[in-house]
Image (cartoon, rainbow, N blue to C red; front, side, top):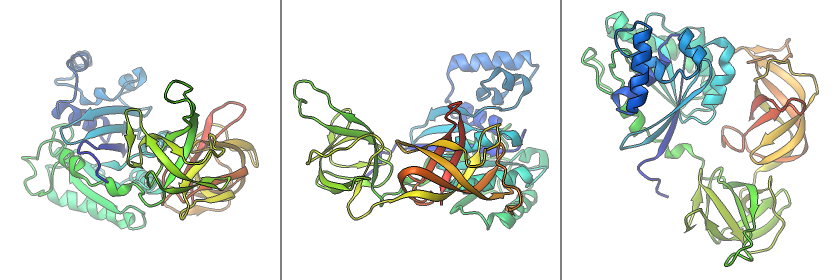
Length: 418
């Protein structure tokens, strides 16, 4: 299976307020020549109005009016850019404690998390919080960017001190790949170009690290899972008998001739063909969107899952999950919510809150079971019908879900299945 050279990498930024996340992304876009001229002109004008000497790089990502006025990031800002080697989607997430939920949103699909640390302040409570959330969301790669090195005279000693501080608690985290990088986002050191001021650092600058990072193995290629989103019946010449099951491959590889089972019914068949918008293909793998046709005419509808005969997910009506509460309203005990898992929506309830996690000390809170905004807790969920689930650590698609309040239609929680 060969993925193309221009592979998509999603990364998220996290750090405390004023650690320079937006400036870093602005510098990345500016130095890699990924900004349109009209955007640049608009931001030059805004910078001049605010009395800045040069271009205020943070304005490239601060899209909301309130953000520009306060000089902070409130919402998750997504930015897209491409280099000859790779396509990127950046989720710039807020640093304030009250916006933890936005970090969860921005980081849930990321391959890489950039955690920023102010070189003057070192590792603080927010750093631990963001590293814990990155670990909880099973982001495979962490790049710890020690920013504002210009304000500590580009000191190698200070850089090593911060690495030691970070490593002291990161041993408890479930992250396979952690790298450290000394940068100055404001001056551009080690962002796109290697730093002249830190000759002692022998690693590559940030853009080169992001362009060359190996991410193909982050996708689960073993457990074949295809949640069906819709059934295609074109009813036009050449396609009168066509019945395709359309969706996005969650994980694994599917090929024509594969023996498959449709869950939860348990009917078996063989894959007849796999079609994309452009053509018929010999194999489909995550995250391709395809239409699969089967040899047998069996009943398949939205919410069903096509899997390999010898590798099936467990249908469960009750399971444990780590839940991040996203709503202003406190969770009601045993209240009913709609659970959205892949393309399958069911009625569900939070049967029990087992414990909450203090994201600053990583300790369990056993005596407080109320779920408030930004709380992270281990809970037991019960659903009306079985869901085809995997553990989140094995499969970030079939191991995650959201809860929706039926009365307000708001997304109240995001969960990772244990």
